[in-house]
Amino acid sequence: MIDRFADIKILRYHVDGFEKLPLERKLLLFHLSEAALWGRDIYWHQNCADGLRLRKLVEAVYSWQRDHGCLDERMAEYAKRLWFANGPYHHYSNDKFRPDFSADELRGWAAQAGADALLDEEMQRLIFDHGYKAKKVSLDTSGDIVADSSVNFYQDGISQQEVAEFYKAQARHPLNSQVVKGPDGKLSENVWMSGGMYGQAIDRVIYHLAEAKRFACNELQVKAISQLIGYYESGDPVGFDEFNKTWVADKQSDVDFINGFIEVYDDPMGLKGTWESIVELQDAEATRQIELIAANAQWFEDHSPVAPAYRKSQVSGVSMKVIDAVMLGGDCYPSTPIGVNLPNADWIREQFGSKSISLANITHALHEEAQQKDQSRPSVLAEFAFSDEEKERSRRYGRVSDDLHTQLHECLGHGSGQMRPGVSLDDLGAYGSAIEEARADLFALYFMADPKMVELGIVDSDDVAWSHYDSYLRGGLLVQLARIEEGRDIEEAHMRNRAMISRWVLERGQDSGAVSWIEKDGRHYVSIADYQCVRRLFAELLSEVQRIKSEGDYEGAKRLIETYGVKIDPALHAEVRARYASLGIAPFSGFVNPVLSLVYSEGEVSDVAISYDEAYDDQMLRYSADYSALA
Image 1: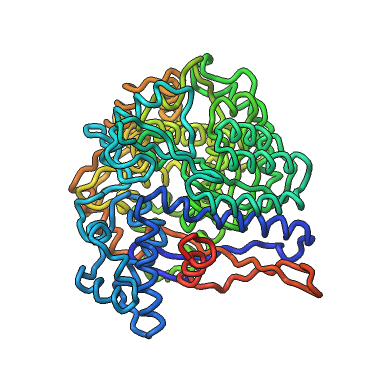
Image 2 (image 1 turned 30 degrees about the vertical axis):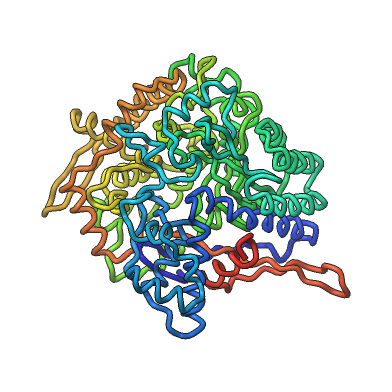
């Protein structure tokens, strides 16, 4: 851990073996990394219309104070939170966070730093009026989820109904656009592309992609990069489809990348993609075991507990790799996923397959940090697990079971099942993301306890699965509540998914005695007595969730999520928050990237150096100076 503030800790990750790579691979990684960093401002712009101006103001004050040896701790924390969230909204709760300093203090600091022109009335309102643009993403369907969300995919003054009607009349919705309203009241789109919104930044992405193409691993990767460049130049979503089809087909490259407008979690309508990038170096040894899972994808699909009509008759193109992240960008930085499965388009998955990655060096850094905690202090496991048996099983199998669940979730879960003709995940509206994550989680939870895991040599004991069953219910029912402010509902899609599954299983498991909700000494715990029964409950729920997705059953999705995945018992919430706070542990983690730099000899590039010593604030300030149109 290199920094700690608010509810966040900052870690480093390392890229083993980078120094031994041939120069061509290093240059490929360098240029893909530069392309990852040049998209940063796009994501800031998507998160908040005034986010980049706010960043410039805060960085001016932060830098002036730091340079003059008078950095105010309150300003330091606000700046670090702003950088971490890529805007003024908490990266998980979506609530706008409040500064501990006053408007008068900020005005004085801005004047000192020569940045007072940035602190206009609108900026002061954004920072200090907590009721103004209070939430980045609202999923409260009792209101207008577009009008009530401050994310910058839809211009102010546009309603949910207007967006729905606008896209109802169109063949498709681009991931890379913002909906705006003209003087005549008609809606249109501004597109993030070369010559469009943030075109200068995208031109730099294009430049480095073109340079990366010179060092590509194979001709298929050359084609994929060329198609991605064409997409950025045209803004046409068909171009992104073509790129994804080629990218999925490339299973051989030991260097790979994610780059584009991809995930829709931050759009209340689930239509627009946040810009993100991960640059990857394959861990060949660790990938060999995971390839067993991918090679048996058809067996898992055939034995899925969902209705036969909703299974794929032929699974194709499924692959998974264990990778080391080399560079994180956009929506994947500083907070990053530990596993990814792409592309998201179901029709591409069904016809061409998908690729999954598990980020080994990220999970390694997280586990290493957890192991280095002061052993004299209580841990989350010690505080929230009920029995000594449960704790010991988690200590022995916890990392293995977490990795297995991630691999099954990403490699098979997201790629499983099929839709009825004419049905799209978009039909589930604001509930689509939570349903999709629940489907992948349930697929993983069910199959990680299948005898096939032992047969394949992936695990040697059912205790691996039982360890994850314990931690999953413990997390969904208790631990994750520590991440939410009291009085708030659960809104983030992954959290809704976990709460929905855990509460649904608890409700039915209590009836048979398979699961117990225990209160002891004023503390709540969950305990599993019959793990096979819990597995059968996972199967039952998976069947229903797959039906909901396959049929586009909006009301079914709403019923599940609203009943089990949203509301929190206030007394339990307060209890969990107090118990977690007593541990002194930051619940959220993020990372600084390594620094890649070209080494020259006699005017020619002779090497690419990698270093790991950059501080969190230095990296953020350097990125704003080197990779922003605001510089």
